Length: 110
Image (cartoon, rainbow, N blue to C red; front, side, top):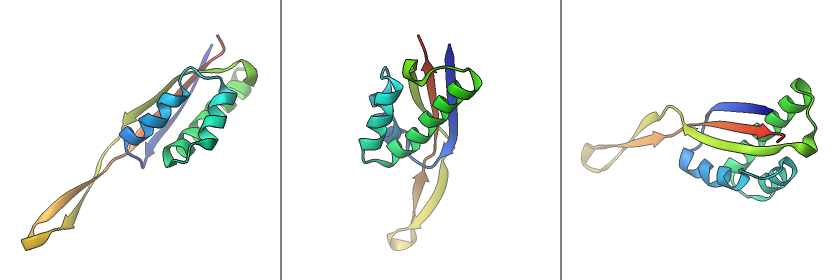
């Protein structure tokens, strides 16, 4: 049985978050949670919240045991981009793209 949790509009670049998401795929939930705690990145903290939410969904909604769960997928997709401008030399403006992400964590007990 599959259980998922989605976090949307997270204020981090998808490229940075995918580096941490790749570490979680195929791991047991306990191992994934320990990885998230030890990796010193903002993306690890944010993915950890989504992972804990997926575990809570599995335990409360589907009555699954936490020890049996495995991270099937940890996906990071792009969200909307917030566009800002910074002043540059000679009266010009440089575009700054503030990227957002959508996280999806899928757990399975198989």
